[in-house]
Length: 115
Length: 154
Image (cartoon, rainbow over all chains, first blue to last red; front, side, top):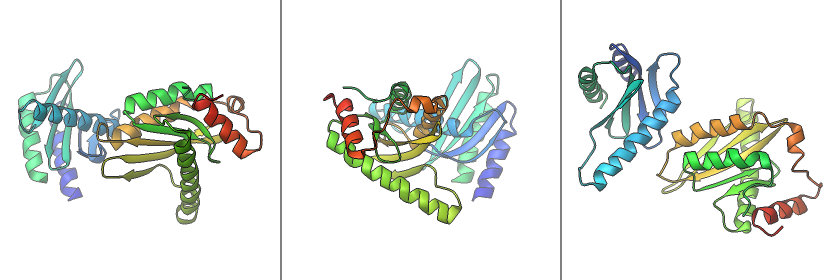
């Protein structure tokens, strides 16, 4: 399981513009496995990406929009992608000019692969 | 109501509580003497928590020494609705123990992250600063005095 997860994260991290790919538990916000460039704090990324996803999920449920499938956050210097399967969240941190469509598709495939 | 009996704990603990969205927090010496608290309304509760935390720390440290060759670090207990995070932070040549209670408004990952910041903020505290919370040698008296300060009776 861990090897498959690590391989999946490795293939996500190899996509153009990706700076970090990690899996984390949504309930605890702790990283399970990660592939990151040296200056990315995987613990902090896991904690805040899952917290953000959790809040978004609650907001969507409160608004009557149903379950949240994935979350994309565009910031000045980067893009964040989070998707969830069960309690496992997969998080991608990418450069601002990374191909968002490609990364979303890759993220959904990765989720199916580790589910 | 004061939150801390030592000025160097005020801001770091306040930041930790606010950023990590903690419900309750208490900082104490390994002896069980309270130094700061957030969220408690009764001094008796703080006194009980401090006694328990000091005992847990002593047990976990000794277990760690025997099983691992060194005291265990942070401890987490996930309850049904609330969770506990308990960790020591080095201060000067001593240690401050922190117990944080949180619910699903935050997560263990977030609490751990901001605890690192809290511990980092205490790295500049010197042994001279520690002397701002002098002990008289009488534990009961020290504990009573600190609880009185924290709950506005001093």
